[in-house]
Image 1: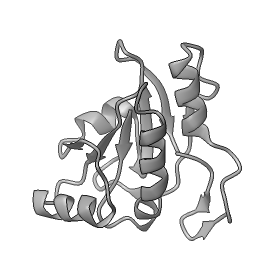
Image 2: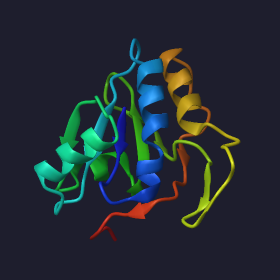
Image 3: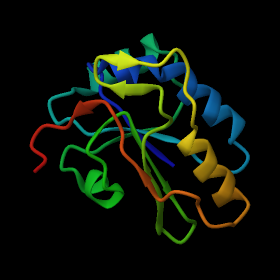
Length: 142
């Protein structure tokens, strides 16, 4: 389970408590990794970011976008769920909290990532393979 974030993305940062709660909830069934894909973010900035937001998840850097391409992500925050054999089962938003970059609902009405993880854990088909995410674009993507 990969969660793509940026240190400077306000939407990614607002999802920090949700990401941590989900990683704790699914810890017996799924490994969660934070992926920092922006090349200009230094290891020191990433360490400070994880400390500031209380993250205790393994961190991956993806400055060449190898994971970004494999997970088919476009923005942060965005998630990717893979099967044990490496097939991409889901990619997209965590939930529908954000309507667009400047407008959020009071609370989400759908929980796309949880639904995908529940299905994957139960070894059932993921109900939705992709859901468009709202967030900060990744520099240099076409």
